[in-house]
Figure 1 (tube, rainbow, N blue to C red):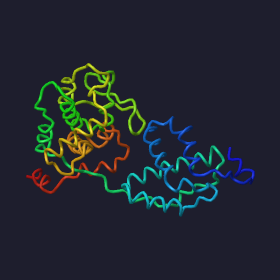
Figure 2 (figure 1 turned 180 degrees about the vertical axis):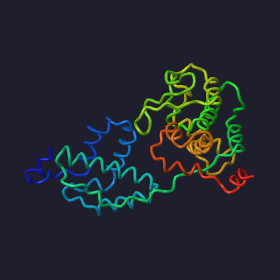
Figure 3 (figure 1 turned 60 degrees about the horizontal axis):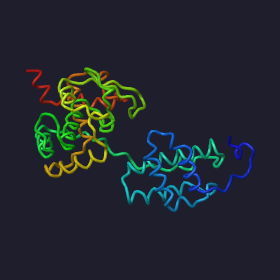
Figure 4 (figure 1 turned 90 degrees about the vertical axis):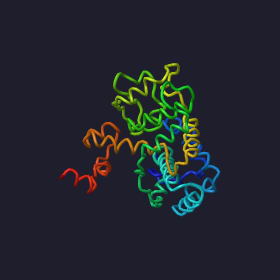
Length: 283
């Protein structure tokens, strides 16, 4: 109950740090992204913002914190941290009676960059798999499994976290069932013949299909990318490339269902046809 607001009583003199710690102890551990939240809450505790008393907290304090963070990390990171702070203040307001209003509501968030739509040509795929030492067949090293992970992503448009989280119990003859996705939904992803071939190459000697942790996957991928001298390639670019490819085979509704996308409008860019292709169709 928001006793202070309902009774007109003075708000308790807790600080932002008190709120961060209580949220870390009581709320964050219940969330799927608890590890990330706890790490960010720890960072926030070390900022001077944490010393401000909640009754005295104003948008200017949060705007100054935002500018300090923007000098250290990307706008996307700051937006995520602002969303976390908003959740903390929501608990303060609705559950603990420590705030009467949301102090971050009127603070502008950094502008979101345009989403990446980088294509991944076959020549780069070949160079990357070569740098990972993979030339086909059953994988023998973690580098080989990273190569197959990337090739599987190009076939399915699955996110890296979804692929690494795959368990053998999630795999059926022609599809993968994802019990926990980014959107919180269960999703069944159809596998192409090539995707099924990749899965068939992987030994079933571990619970997870690709037997890789995120840190290993990230390190080995970046190392191979740099060795292959491929510029500006992120693992996540495999998703955009896969969506481009799937858009040639599926209509927009089918594509949205396969990749777990709710915003159909944002998918229409994948269906844009250039003038040369239209000319070829016209004959």
